[in-house]
Image 1: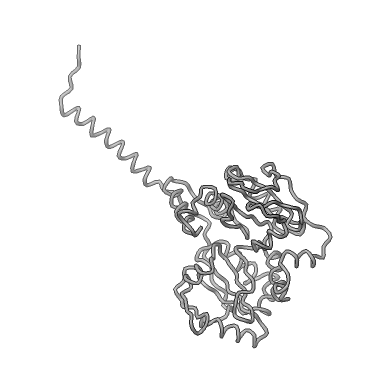
Image 2 (image 1 turned 135 degrees about the horizontal axis):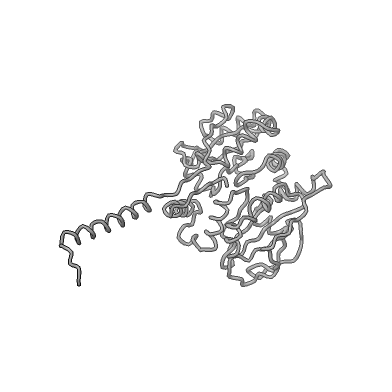
Length: 344
């Protein structure tokens, strides 16, 4: 016996099923990921109240026997907040900075006009782009000639930043690299011992190598290397990204012979100088034999992983600026319902 249902019943069933499907789909769409870890902060009141005329600022600073320090920051940046709290608001470096530097804040996306010289004026965001500010805080030290004397890219712990401050104040940047300066001025005999990492491979012949390569530079005077191993590259998500690379490590002080991607002979010490890699642990990222970017400051896992994906996935072909890809990747994850803790 076949059961027959009246048309209105079948219509009810269809509408009921479509409602369930629609409700589930809406729930999935509405379940967007959340971003946590951002940090609101205030620029210290003692920073120089500048009209952003760099030439005049340099002259005023020289009158006080100081140098100009440009502090490039981004709203809600946790790295900026930590750097300010630990160095510019409190800590052992505060008095040293106030004694030797006139500090001027520059917002990475700001609209204030900065006068570089009598013929050139740019908005904060335009200057940031020209100077290729990729990570915040980026700190640019201005010399007596009004030009960049030295810069750091990204967050540094207070001890590592103190090395930079003393290097600049002594004007050692005029005749030596930060790496050589630290090596020659290191007072403690007890140094960092290189930590074993299962994902590291050995390679010194890189000519014509086309796959992604991550070169890690450490040295015996490294302050932040232990934390890099214990808190970052031993994470499962970071390990997964690093598997896309030939991941190798060199002693930044070494003169070991390396055959570079172009077939030329180089060394770790020379590479550090050539690529202006002034942070330890520092990482150079290559793809198709070309250096795409570098990691020259301390990063949390989300930003570190995103830089790795940027290079290994060749996203630099569509996004010449890493910051533009970062926005896209962040939105992609949020739309997939993935939460992002930027300080994890």
